[in-house]
Image 1 (cartoon, rainbow, N blue to C red):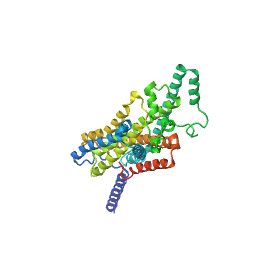
Image 2: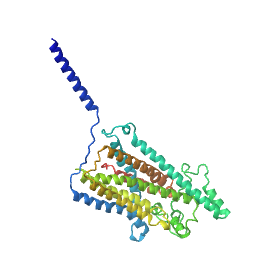
Image 3: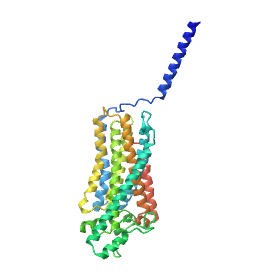
Length: 391
């Protein structure tokens, strides 16, 4: 009887240990994949470097070139479409191509530790929004303070008082009051009586040439403090936008380099996406009033964007044997940087590309309703470009 009892105890103990092991195995996180889905086809992948280089560079450079050389015959409505279509692409990139992949990366089952204990994607994006707001706020205040100090030191009393009164904050004369206008293009909205009135699309899309011309002639001394502040805000917004799209471009290039069977689809999508995103960036570069000493800056920024993805593809091909996009390190890095880029583009898209362009733009407020509705439609169409496939 004791032998039977002993056997029963052994069997029960083994069953318990087996069940405990199964439960432990089920509860343990799966091991992260240490490799990638690279499946050869080096020639096609190398071709992606040059095809995307041409597409993204053309998208970013052509609006700047065409705006500087109106003799090439590009109609103004084409700039109008490129500007607002590109805005839609950039806004959708923040939500569709950055937030979603960041969530996928930072909630991957193989990750453990503090990274899994908080909604880091939304938290990082939110922190980035506040950081950018603070940076832009300080840039505007610094520009205003510097201009006021120089004016008070070098100008006559009447000019100083007029500029000081223009820069003082009056309740209601701000963005929320909708009475403090951004300087869109004085030459397009206040045409002299002897000059023919430009068309609606020409009024909306202009490079603010009068402000840039003023810089060229007298170093910007003839501008008011509000114009200096607006110019500073535009330059800051452009640099923020450039920073965000470059972050995004780096990781999509690495992903394309080691993609597996989805490579063909990703290749085609990236060509169009990077080109349209470049158009959005390039149209913003073209519409910014660069002073004479910095007239080459938009070309440099456009070329930097055009080179980022091809260089990332080349780097990805170079490390294809060791780069593991599904490893813990890669998932955390990709997730964090995608979250940062999402915060950058959300802030830029909602504040600069939507609020400033539509609600706080004197030119757009004076434009015919059909022009405003067309701009909104084109922007939504650009956002729709980002929906078919996740990058």
